[in-house]
Length: 93
Image (cartoon, rainbow, N blue to C red; front, side, top):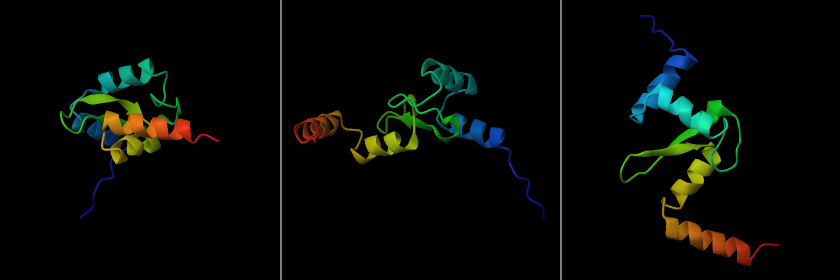
């Protein structure tokens, strides 16, 4: 049995729709963010993650995988992010 390989565009559409948004909404977010990560502006749009709230499922924006992982590792907790910021400011060399 031959399995058909999905094209990049088919995989992209499936990934976008899995977050409950349309391709048009994704493209608008990408345009609103000047084609890159909301935080750093990195423009490798093939590797942008669809960032979402783990409590509500609501899509927040597009982030590079490093920044998406960083928020996840902080538990999506604004207080932890503020503590991390204060720590970095205090110990900035």
